[in-house]
Length: 247
Image 1 (cartoon, rainbow, N blue to C red):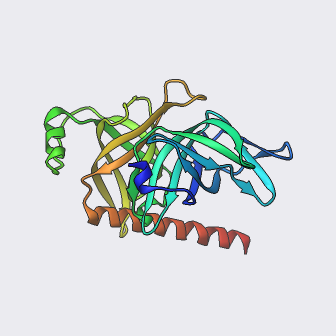
Image 2: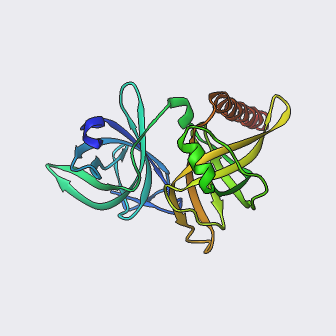
């Protein structure tokens, strides 16, 4: 799959999953940027890929081994996304290389659904029961009522999914029910959604708390468009407030 969809020269955007990860520059300073743009050097296998070490102007950005990154691959006409971990750094033919091991499956993204909005949104979640999973497999989302829900906080949302923090640990590939409210057209609207966990990790600075990344499943396109519109409107409000503060 990887070698059929991606190739040498495709542009890549790397976003740090662990926000405390630093990166050494070739001047010995710590690079604090969390997003890096570079390109594919070579595809070694279906789960290992060589990425050219990113540069900022004339500075080489030596991302640290064991750092985990959200990887966005730019191809025409689509984007692909997965998570990967740096397992080695080396030099080949005068090119500095990062060797990544893929830690999730590659998935296609719509360009607008990828845009993520940082937030602190109250979310409630639980695992789907067997009957609900069967319904999802038939492309129908039906939820049982009265089952206990865990209180969580989404730290970013997009039209394709969310990142949230919970005291509950959900295993990758598990299906969960999640519910939250957004202000749509001046009114609170409740969203009852199914998501697949694509990655999970315990927070190093908060033992017992887990950060999960979730991809929506069988999502109604009208609701997806509402969420995307909500994100863009909130971004515009923030830019307007920032402009007002400066002026």
